[in-house]
Image 1 (cartoon, one colour):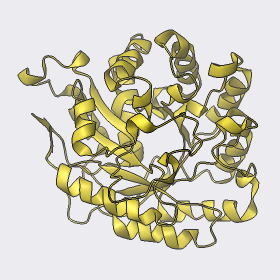
Image 2 (image 1 turned 90 degrees about the vertical axis):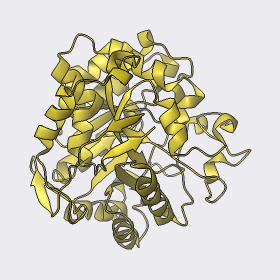
Image 3 (image 1 turned 45 degrees about the vertical axis):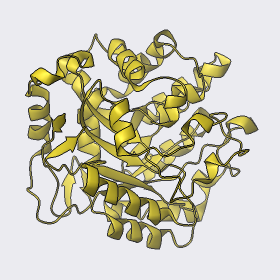
Length: 358
């Protein structure tokens, strides 16, 4: 089947809600994002969509695609330690048709591709790869690429990403350090306090780019300081802030950190990745966390995301999104829409072709 999409992008640098935004595709129609979201919300499902779960309209702001035959993903090499355990079940090509098969139960509006652990020696290669997928498949509709902000040449890498794709909307640098080596993503614990790193972070506003990152609760104070010092840059905390209380049962540090971050108007949160900390998570495990985030940030700064295919190690896409939907049934339809699509579309300013082919 074909899921209809609507074109919308900015044709020149502009500002949205006080934030400077980057260039998009020249020659596309400039449209009002709020009106586009309202159109998405009000468009009735087609008869062929009757079997879809809730006929839920999903804009997925966090997933990965990879081609292991052509590209290098060091974290998936056999024997490489990983928080997800053994990635063998997903150590195979995961391309547009695979993602569309996993999302078949839902009305897919569009997606954002996040760096997927691509060869760190060639981060821009992933952006070129994803741009080609967009041209061939109609999605992803925005790109967040890998940039190591401790690299003295970070600005050159950012500009190369932007030159490689008009879909480029932000960068990601995972800085999640944990005292437990099994939970550690990086060996340095001081990125968020490093002068060179912070100096390169300060360049993002001039490029109109957002910043995605992954941190643990004990690092949230540093993220809050960064957010307040650079209030013009939107910061997106990935994987629900890595609530390690899912392992220990103690969420006090996570709650305190999220409360601090919620006081920064430029901080947003993606809700996903629970399986990395609790592989067998249930709706009951995460519902209190989602409720806490809604209370702190409100739906307009929250986004449900899949983290596929990584989270496919733990649960099917349908089960994850059905549980998300059950967790927010008490919200109004417009508030639910914000969390499933609206917030992410406002933040990442996707570029839509006419259709995604399923």
